[in-house]
Image (tube, rainbow, N blue to C red; front, side, top):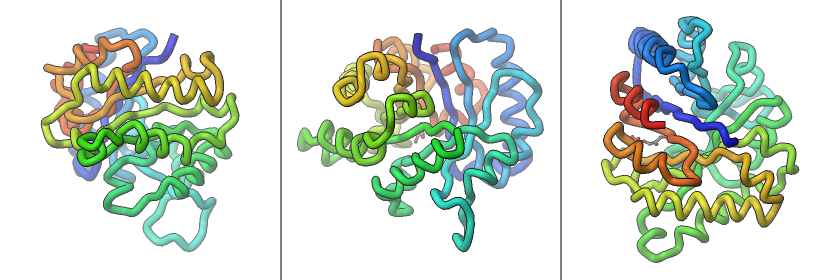
Length: 252
Ligand code: 13P
């Protein structure tokens, strides 16, 4: 059975105090839910990662990073390495978010290197992909997604896929209030799963959790999560409010 995941990507939001207060409130309310086969994840900014890790008890909330550099170490001002993350207890990193691709010029090639670094360090990646509005309008969205997945991930071995979570985030749905319909999400998730099945095997494809991200709210989460190939969500805005985030977790 695939693991269900609800992950909150806090992006460049929440100072030290806000981060600690928010994660504590999430942990308290999540523990009551007694979740099974479900992971609850938060991704604070780098500067607050350690404080958030330290403020958690032994509940079920996991803390992950929003990005990571591919190199081991060295002269990369402003960057963070896998080893640095591991040294504060971080085992998972979000990679390839569209905001990283758009504003920081992250390429598929750089992402393939980052994925290798994740695997070399026995970490896990939540790999984001998705098309922009023009691609959707011109019916090019499947080609774009196929290319993103192939370039960054199709050099992996079968066993590497245990360390990969996929997150479909159509760029036109991020922070816009416009969600992909549950049918659009299901169609893309099923397509991506079939790509993995064709390249690897059905068994590998069946084990990969594929999250949907883009304006998920408590009011639309249930409908989206009810689709067969949607294994959870990567949440932006609604992850910054404890009740909204808990509402989404309850939906899963
Ligand atoms: P929103 O939920 O704010 O649309 O953001 C989605 C996202 O980018 C999560 O990574």
